[in-house]
Image (cartoon, rainbow, N blue to C red):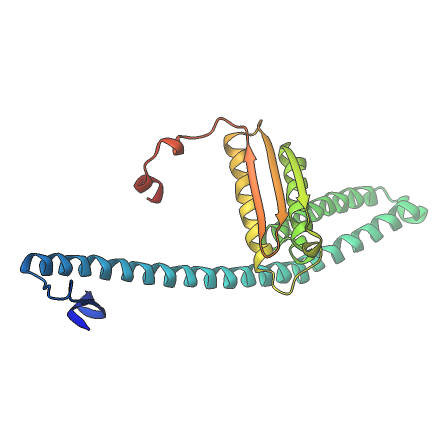
Length: 246
């Protein structure tokens, strides 16, 4: 049935064909129409190649994100299980020594012990500060609420931004009972956490005094997360489609 077959080529490789039947019972393709079809085939080939490249890039990006999250979790666990445990042991030991110095009258009779106690106390304060920094790094790398379900993650993130940055956040959670507990796959929890955190960071950066509305709603098969604020906005509304894509 095919009257004309036009190859679809991209980067000097044939990736498909465009086949067309005869135009009408006794029609034919003239030279002008053939030229047009060849141009159309070239555009289709480029579009098809772009779609393929986009899908491949998206899949690679998702795979890279999964690997990155695993590495972040591994690093957070290593920090927690090694240096944090050691610091905790040292601080507990110093606390025990300070207790003995304060309660042992024979030791306290020596004035030099007061200086030792003061030095130990200052060292203990530095160690506790270092432990706090490491804990915050662990939380930043892999927040503990990540494994407690999407609803808990959203509530924890909004609470954290209220406490640390003073944001006025109105949170609404609807029909999310199935997300109140950890799911078999944490990919959705990771995505929701990253999107919400990035959006609230933008509010902190560009509109710290704005009111923010966060809504988490579960549909039959989908999860909807929306973040809105009444800040001054940006010039994005005046950009063209090509500028937005760029």
